[in-house]
Amino acid sequence: MTSLQSPPARRSGPGRSGAASDADLRRRLATNRPLVPTATLGGIIAAGAPLLVCMAAAVVGWFLTDAGGEGAPSGALRVGAHGWLLAHGSTVAVEGVRITAMPLGLTLLCAWVVWRIGHRVGESISGHGPDADRIADGARDLTVPYAAGLFAVGYAVVGVLTTSIAATAASSPAPARVVLWSVLLGLGVGGPAIAFGSGRAAIWLPAVPTAVRDAALVARRILACWALVSLVALVAALVLDFATAANVVSQLHADAGAVLLMTALTLLLLPNALLFSSAYLLGPGFTVGTGTTVSTTAVVLGPLPMFPLLAALPDQGSQPWWTDWLMLTPVLLAALVAGRLQRDRPVLAWDRAAIRGCAGGIGAGVVLALLSVFAGGAVGPGRMQDVGPYTFDVLLHAITSFGIGGVVGALVVCWWQRDADGRVRSALRAVRVRLPRRS
Image (cartoon, rainbow, N blue to C red; front, side, top):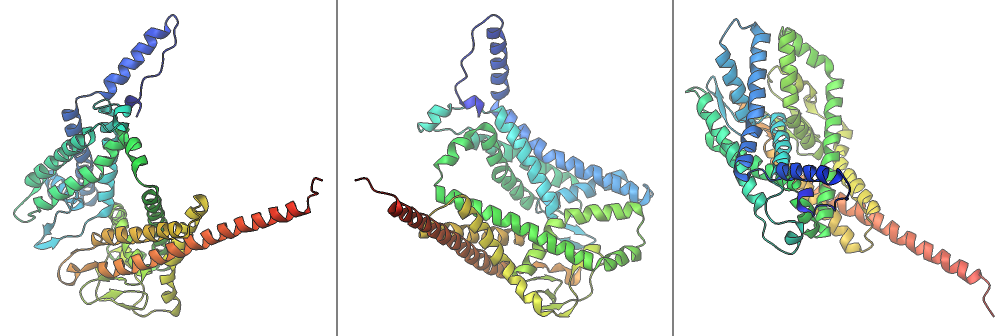
């Protein structure tokens, strides 16, 4: 943002002018790097850094499991590349079985790297284009769109090259989906990061209506709190049935290296598990195989793979009476979040408070349903080709629960604030009546 503002006035004096000139020159050099190579190279680095980490982790895992007794390092590198491709929506065939589920933990890691590098790219090109005054006056500034497009192109090139190099006749990854996700990450995450890093976001955001920003803030807080609630529910289920998870590990006869790899895989799948837990708390539930269902009302299971995280599943059969009350959790949470925002940013108009709470709740429900779409997929042969939350039901329950909770919370706190103001005015009138009047 500093490069968009007028430089501060320099103090006169011996030695100060030269130091200020050097600092100003360094700042200008740091914020006026060539746009095309900087943005393109930023996209390449943002894609290549997680890819190298995945390949290195695969090689380490190969040595931990059999000390390099079987296979070759090239095979381990290819496995790491396939893991990176899975995180970008590619489907990969393993022993003739098509895997479509995405490890969302790895996807989030890639998105974080994109944000960090995109922010640095924005800082490096912030000196391009018009300054803050000209932008405020309506001057057209295409610095961020150009940079974001080049960033996405660089990212997509790495995805295409990885697909072509790592592909085999047996695995056959899907390059089109990799390109699509590369563009989504490059534009959807890298674009805002470049805007914030270059300072343009600080100029554009105040132009967004206050009601829209407040509703987005409600939605963001609801999603953050709901992720925490889902995590607590997941951890509680694992702790209550920890013996089952330990039994699974013991039956696998896994050594320390295999346990370490299994732990890393569990962490990569943790966001997926959180979305499964979210679907359970909302009411619709999810499926862990064709013909199965897991919800607060009933649980129907079949044979499951031996994976410790599945120990968090509830027991088969009808559920206790209190599990039906879990569906009140999203309503209460949305009411608390919307009420707290109403308390921090009071809006005494009934309609504005209701719209802010309702729009924020509905927005949170829509985003949660979109995320739930990518939580499941095919993870194995046979029945395990149908695993994931019931997305459409999650959408209906989420927008209803969060929307109602947001409206109720905002209106209750708004009523309390208006009533409190009325009590204050009544008290002031009573004091004024008791004061002695001038003759």
